[in-house]
Amino acid sequence: MMKSVIEYKNYREYVLDYYQERKRCSAFTWREFAKNAGFASGSYLKLVSDGKTRLREESAKKTALAMGLVGFEFDYFVLMVRYENAKSDQEKKKCFEEMQALGDASRVKILGSEMYTFYETWKHSVVRELAVAMPGAKPNEIAKVCRPSISAADVSESLHFLVKSGLLKRDIRGHYHQTSQSLSTGRLNVVAVAVHSLLRQMGEFALDALDKLPISERHFSGITMGVTEESYTKIVDEIAAFRKHIVSMVAAEKNPEKICRLNFQFFPLTEKINVNA
Image (tube, rainbow, N blue to C red; front, side, top):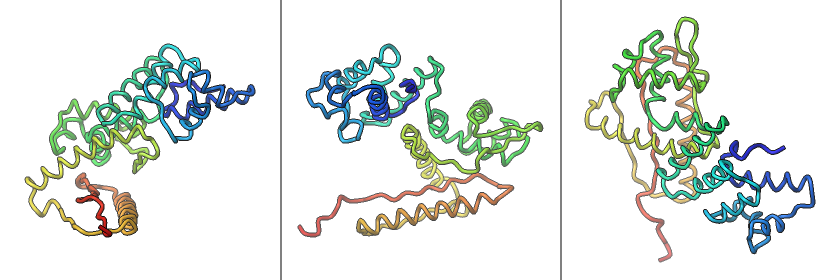
């Protein structure tokens, strides 16, 4: 039996699963599926499930009805389509929050929702590190060492979220421990929007540090260079390898003295140069 649509985060996966379930029980075809949804092309929904074309708002509604979705399940499917088609992070954020609300209302957990919340603000990542680095510290004590400053209420709220979502655990002494030393967004596309928000926040903090911190407390450097597609790929791979090396190096530290942020930024400053022009 198929999972409820509200347990999905990708509408293409649901369309494919629906087709395969119908096919398993009958002689159902993609052509019949498309006809039921009112599409002239018998291969349209097959192309959608293969990622070769997309559903629009109206075609999403027709497809949802053809799959027998009604009520909040109908709304959820349309939101998944709207989320993928959104042109800005703000639009994606709004759609995902509506998907979360529908999931909460029907008591179904949406995959990736905790990590979405985690990456939405810099506070959770910093509090997660400080809670372990300052065993037994009260929220107001943790708040005092944060830069920029946050309130004790912010710290308490973050600690509650981190424990509830399983990103921190608390022992009988009241000390916090990380359930995993490092975190990854993996393949959760819904998290990408929140990560963009976090990167913007951290970029703003970097500019602030450039102006306010002495050179002895911050390190900034950069290179402007010409690259080919091949060297671009190699540089990206080198950055990924360096990042992994840094993570493994600090993972061995038992008593950190401060929480730092390392940003990786590598982006084009020009359009692609046409050397044959």
